[in-house]
Length: 347
Ligand code: SAH
Image 1 (cartoon, helix red, strand yellow):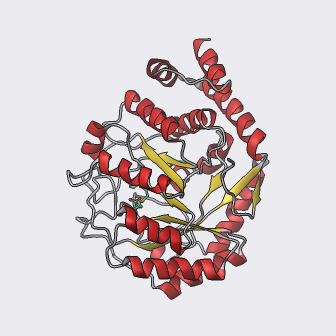
Image 2 (cartoon, helix red, strand yellow; image 1 turned 90 degrees about the vertical axis):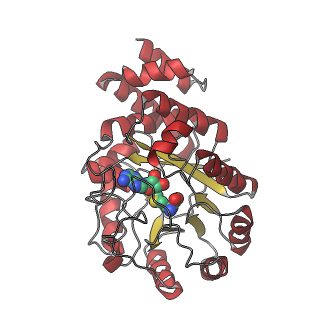
């Protein structure tokens, strides 16, 4: 009963306290989850109807100077088969994507200094010039504010940089000491100040994560009010120090998605590939829990297998067109529809 009351409170746009959130998360069961998802769908449908937005993900380099303990493309992973896409290859991905109805391109990579700001700006302005009706999203890690500003001026609209965890203590258990939550947050606030539509987020079930950490994540999100939030289960990668750690569950990820939809009703919330990886219908379930975005892969098939953040990633052999058709079927099977627009966040 208490849990239903707490969900109603969130639904009425009141925030919960740290301990109320902990109660809600720790005592969740099928009944409260179903109720939460129903409310979350109600909120998303009030704002976004049955539309699901598409983002075309272009993973353009898996070189990375960082050594995040959870990530398969971390610098120390000698087994990673490294690749970089040229500007021409990136433009080809966009061309294929545009024909398939994509109106957002997400350029993601490891933190790869090979791509200078000049090169990145050239790529961004080329996409901007050829596809004036598309949104350009970057997901290339921590950079000085001056660089972010140059990307913005070149035509980038959005930036994804997950905070990973809002607890500095927890952050330090997931990252080498060259990386800090403080620096991460500074980047996120820089991006916001520069007028990017900002996306942040975290992994569910990452090693050492407590319920209290998850609530801190929710509190941080509420304070930041980002336009987009990417969350997905942590999935171990065999060539990382976390190879033997237990992964996050689909069930808890869905519960967190539902809570986020109630806390930030208008947020753009992807049902992630990681969720689809640990459950064959994970992405559909994510939409049913309040998600409204999917991010299929537009990277060339021959590099797909190389951009491995975690084990058993799905859709590695499929051409972009096949992914597009498959996702459309999945979305329609649950009564939603893919909308071929930029899919900007509502104000
Ligand atoms: N270098 C860019 C892109 C990182 S990859 C950046 O730092 O923003 C995008 C996201 O994948 C990361 O933010 C992280 O949350 C997630 N990720 C990395 N390794 C993962 C793993 N083993 N399981 C689940 N998600 C993972």
